[in-house]
Structures are given as structure tokens and as C-alpha cells.
Length: 169
Image 1 (tube, rainbow, N blue to C red):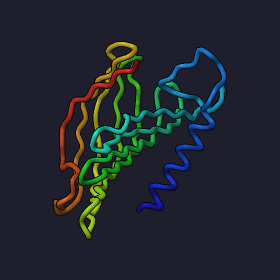
Image 2: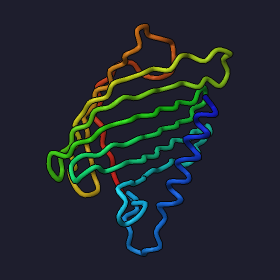
Image 3: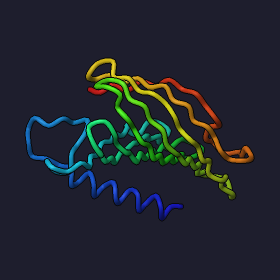
Image 4: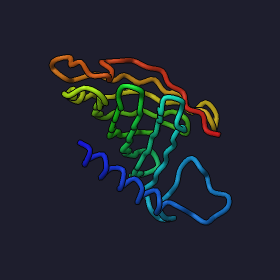
């Protein structure tokens, strides 16, 4: 599992390194790998807090046309007792400039820092809708359906409906 995390981290670093652009007025929220490329990357990280907590997110995407795209999203969060790693593969369809639908699969793995036996990963199907309220604010409603046959004792989540918002600044 650690080898998989290292490989994904290396690929994300390479993609983000290729996304660098020397233009002074570039959009910091999303990078295109080249002018004629349909690949894009984005990401962010929160700083290390008092308990050595850190939260990171990175996205690699490919835009098939103006309305249809595919994204691979990677989340890695560290907490006091465990780390949480989540990988999502989503297909997004833009209904108009502000409204989009998405669907995909996700794998969430809890990495316990102190226990001998790590819990099994959780596999989920994600569905939802996103709406861009302003150019710097996005809201989405999402349903994550846990498809594991037996509920395991991991630190992750079970089936859940959530309403999220993202601010760009």
C-alpha cells in the first residue's frame, strides 16, 4: 500500500511540475499542462497543525470536450491516531456553465499508526451534483454508497450524504 501511495505521489509531482507556466496572470486554481493539452491538474494542502495533522488534495483531469471530463482525485489526511487515504475516479458532465453532474468510484483506506492489523479498504460509488455559486465559490451535494459487503472497523466513513462548499482565494 505504501508503494502505491509513493507511486501516486511521484506521478502527481511530475504532473504538477509539468503544469508550471511562466505567464504572470495565470489562474492559480487550475493548471493546463500545455496550451493544446486537455490534461489539467490542481491541488492544495493545509499546513501542519499542533498534532501534526496535515490535509492534502490533488486532482489530475482530462477534458474530452467542453461538457465532459474525467478526474482522478487523491486525498491524504493525517490525524493523531490514524492517516486516511482516499482515491476517487469521477466522470463529470457540465449541464451549463454553472451546473454539473458527477459519478464515479472511490477507495478509502485508513492507515492506523498504532495497531498491528490495518482495516480493509472501503470501496464506494459516488454520485452528485455541483453548482458554481460565484466564480470563487462552489457547492455540491454528494452521496457516497459504501459497497463493501460487511461493515469493517476502519476510521473511514460508511454510506453518507453530504453537502460541501469550496472557496477559492
